[in-house]
Amino acid sequence: MKNHIKYFAVVGVIFLTGCSDTLHNQPVPSPGQHAHVLKATIQKDIALQYLLFVPEQYNPKGPALPLMVFLHGAGERGDDLEKVKVHGPPKIVQNQKDFPFVVVSPQCPQNRWWPNMIQELNVLLDDILARYNVDCQRVYLTGLSMGGYGSWEWGCANPERFAAIAPICGSGQRWRACNLKNTPVWVFHGGQDQVVPLQRSEEMVNALKNCQGNVKLTVYPQAGHDSWTETYNNPELYEWFLSNQKDQ
Image (cartoon, rainbow, N blue to C red):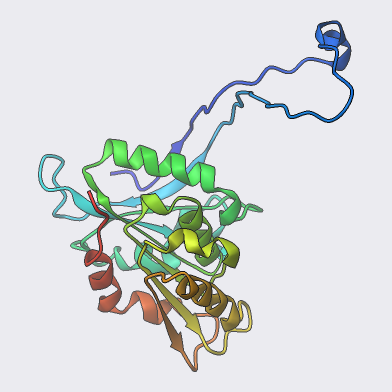
């Protein structure tokens, strides 16, 4: 199986004309301020490279397997997929062929930022769900650093897509945190993190707690920014993921 695929999607079409070409077709506006609605279709080509891990127990006609989406950190951006394998699930599955998840690990292009790529990520997830025998009720999201930010952003934007999320040393927009109040969230952070301060995760966790969200925070008191190695080496994380699934 190839270890990466470039995926392209056409979302729509837009037609633009110059101002002078349309003046004769413009309606005569009424004086004053009035409400209007813009309706348009936009075209966007999407190219997103990713790693796909399929465990030994995968059977296209057998039981559907859970799916894990992993978002890497800023240092792994670019067009070299080998960089995506240096941390987290893509590193683990190189030696653990019976890892109990199908794992998709997209690579963020250089000079892009996961929280600004939610549309692309949704198209990728739609494609994976359509083409592989994975359980739509057991889709899990996790990421580290920039990927932790991406996990918060994607989770808040589309909480209905995930059975649980685990952001590591990331942050998000705390005023949107309550979008995740019905999604189990397990947050991880290093107590000595000088890149993304612990406070960033605490703010998101507290915001979720204030709306009775199902959230917990694990802090490694002596850890710096690398709070992901201990997290992804902990079997309890994967047991927790598998204990959660969306309602039918």
